[in-house]
Length: 150
Length: 61
Image 1: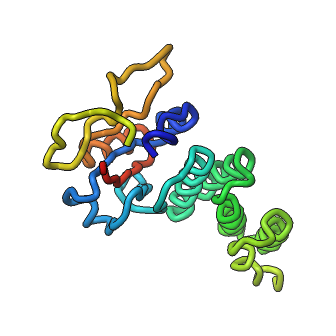
Image 2: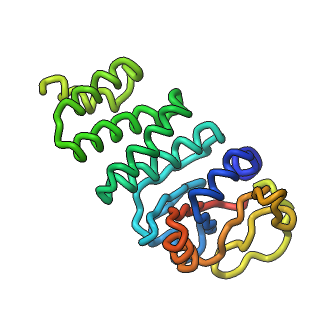
């Protein structure tokens, strides 16, 4: 990550605007034990209370790291019922990185978040329609398949 | 890991700034990621700035 991803200007800019980054050696104490980290590189995204909402394991190139981080931030807002904030960052992810590995999961959470915010089941139908159209082979499309029955 | 820092690592396992040179900004735009050293400070900064904390666990080998 250090030689390829972190020097990338878009990554630097994103970190500067959205994150407070901390690095820890895998064999240090107490963070690896506290967050049950066994392999490197592992990235763990926390809210400002120190609660974990997303993690990745393994190398990520810049074009995958940024959507992965946006997904994590979106899920962080979703977990805390901040649906408008979640929608905003997940929409940005899908607009800027529609072919990224994180995109199908982002589309799933975007739709579910809209449903949670509006209580309108049409949002779930729109979610499965969008997933089937854009990410037909994704596991997230399979996970949303039941919404076809609504 | 992409840098030639030969300083001994602190007991805490944290590095102050992960880079091969001094941190600087060009025209107000950051030129590299500035990694924090202290987790509790990072949480305080995140609260103040309405940001998320990213923990990067790594192996220097």
